[in-house]
Amino acid sequence: MKTISLNEDTVKKHNLRFYFRIYFKILAQDLKSKMSYRADFIISTIGMICTNISGFVGFWILFRNFPTINNWTYYEMLFLYGFSLISVTPAQCFFDNNWSLRMNVYSGDFIKYCFRPINLFFYYQSEVFDVKGLGQLAFGIGTLIYAWVKMGLAFTFLSIVKLLIFLITASLIMIALQTAAAATCFWIQNSFFVLDFVYRFKEYAKYPITIFNPVFRFIFTFIMPIAFIAYYPSLVILRPDEIPLLSWLSPFAGVFFFYLSYKLWMYGASRYSGTGS
Image 1 (cartoon, rainbow, N blue to C red):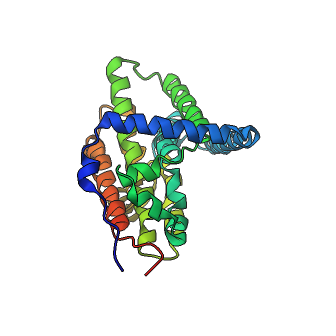
Image 2 (cartoon, rainbow, N blue to C red):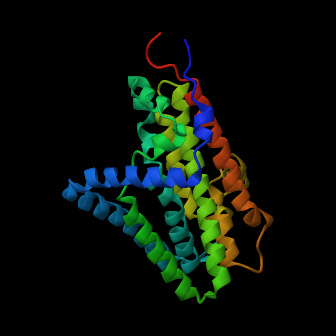
């Protein structure tokens, strides 16, 4: 089989401004198509908010019986919960097309993405924007602010800058996990279970890894690094007097894992040969 090769010289000529302009044009068309089914959008958004409210209620019920869990208070846990919701939202909103990758690969429709003179990864991911993820983002921001105020944390320019930096880089971990799992479809025929398995791990990101045994702490830090989605970056804000080295390294971990997942995705795409022989 002959693999698809991209015109890399043409792709490299495009700058960041070009990609922003193209992205907003694609986004506008996608939003227009989604808003034509407003009832579906409203129901999906309400469903997403109700799902997150159930998690909030779960924490409330749990802490009615236990004032702390392994030295973590109710509001600290809520902060982690809100932080994790915000961190996973970019993966849901901007990279939701990863869930359709295996179907496009197997049907042969993926071939259409290989002949555009722009970055293949950008072109494929920008085609879909999951609007209902904005409901999750709003709930996450509200939860985080509520916990922040209740704990009386300092609200300074520096703390906001640190929060934004660590939120953005933490989101790269979830994006990396989802992207790498989706890319397995280039080699594994029944790859849905891989993506679904990895995606389910995000539920553990809302808990401090100190409540798990040492084996799972190691797994959640170095193998399936979900601890970098909320736990390690949150410590910079929550416990500034006892910040571990891994917390300061979390932005680098986010960039590193995202880069690896991007290269894996692009390598798989470069080996794609369509459905023909």
